[in-house]
Image (cartoon, rainbow, N blue to C red; front, side):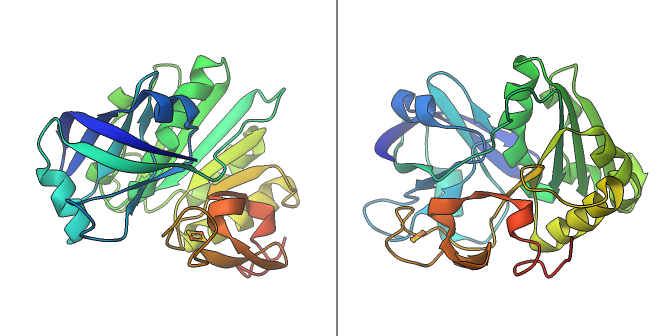
Length: 264
Ligand code: FES
C-alpha cells in the first residue's frame, strides 16, 4: 500500500453527485477495480479519519472518485475543494475483483450508488475481450449508471422502483437467468442485496460454489487500511477477519452462513 499525493485535476457534476479525477500516477498504476483508497478529506488532520472510496474509473495516471450527496463533513470538503488541491491518499487497500483465467461471460450486479464501484471492472473486462453484462437496480433512473458510460458491447439490464427504466421493482425476476448465463459474477451492494443474490445463485446453479461470485464488502468501516485498528473485523468464512486485509472483495460463498444467514 502506498501513501500518495493526488492532485485534483477535474471535477464533474453527475446529478447530485460529483466526480473528482485525481492525478496520481503511481497509485493509479497499482489500483485494481474493487480496491479501496482512503482519502484525507480536509486541511491538516481535521477530520482525522480518512474517507473510503472505491474508484469509478482507473486510467494510466489518474483515478476518479465519486462523492455522493451526503451530510458528511469530509464529503462536503471534497465537493468544495478547488482544482489543484493535493489530497493525501492511502491505497490500494486489500484485494479487488479478479476474473479467473479462461472466463468468458462476466456478470456484474450492482445496487444503487454502490454499482458505480463495478464500472472499472466492466471497462477492463470488456477491453480484455470478455462478454460482459451489467445489471443494476435503484430507486429511480437517477440512481443508475448512465448507459453512455458503458462500453458499447456491454449488455445493460436495469430495474427501478417505478419501472421507468427496465424492470419494475428490483432485479430478482431476472437474476436466475443472468446467473445461469455467467461464468463468474462480480457484485456491489448491501448485505441484504448479497443475501438475495446468494438465494438466486443457489436456485439457478443448484448451489453456490466457491469462486463463482465476488462481492464488495462495504458494511464495515475502513479506518486504517493496514490491519492495525481492527475496526473492519467481520465474521467471514468461519472466523473473524479484517476486511481491509482479506477483502474488501470477498467470495460470496465465504459469507453465506455467518454473515448473510443464507444456506447454500
Ligand atoms: S481498517 Fe483498520 S484493521 Fe482494517
